Image (tube, rainbow, N blue to C red):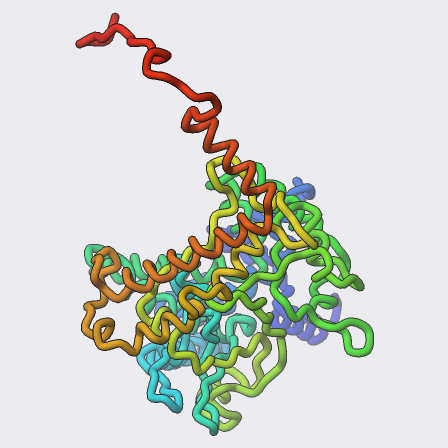
Length: 472
């Protein structure tokens, strides 16, 4: 371009929209190398459909990392020009990065209280590694990578911040650092570098634009025919035009998907992302393990900064956020289970090592889906699971039990798990009654396994020669 002013304006517009070239002369240009690799192998583009924008998002954050950012190649090049404005930009990015990091750390050390006096973290990271624990947190209204807002009525709303990269990138790393420091082994806690590296990696793999790559790595680590089928189905479903937009709903045309649905096969993945169909006619809903009710999906929305329009966070990070909002529930039962980090495992999809519960269906509901539903709805001695847990939590004997040791038989965690297993076992009894063919198949498998196909007498058992040492 002949006009230098127009050329500079074009370059600045590309930088502002994170679409500038990745070839900036840096030594380890991982983003540029990956982009070239995908250009040569376009059939792998599904792993990371977008490369340039996510890489530039990281690089914008990278130049603002305290101390380290000043030594990145773009910042060193600016400083070496000797231009006062260029050097002021380098210093300005450092000042902003330091202030953002300190404020992020301040938020990780802060907490909020609801109207009942219960305490919740002000800012959240990825949460528990065990999904059986994490799903209880989610059912209580907790949300990953979110900031808590105290409402006038004493309730708390979590508002997602990690859709606003690179401005809030440091918040996710700081929140993950706090959670990792609280959960990793004591031997590793002494190494702050290890905690920071683990937190940065955890924050990175949870970004939507690298989800394809992280899903591929997960598939290679635990490959099964079922997981492979689901993975391939998800890639085909992601190719459906405007599927993300349609899923959020278009006013006057389609409604957003209110229920969280189970997609267990190739076809299920396509149906889950397909527009203009009633998906609940084909897919089963995910259910709350404590109540048996379908889990409602939180839609994306635009909202004001949870710290307020006139606040330090608003001035430095922006007054408007985009993402999901989640209202914390006033549920003491769920809160107690979440507080103790009790893992309530879902029913097995395969019983007796060979019987697939998803293959048995009545009126579109699988035996597995019915089992999950009945755990929270069945009554044992006149009480549902939540009613039984609520009564237990109020008892003096429970309050006297110790907590913190999951394996201690008399502890609170073990008590909750024992009650849960009773209801899970009773619910499976109802599954056998309703799905008669399933019950017959289980009996047949047991007969084969334990040799009860034909009656045997003592004389039918042949003695085998005994050896003290194995033969050579």
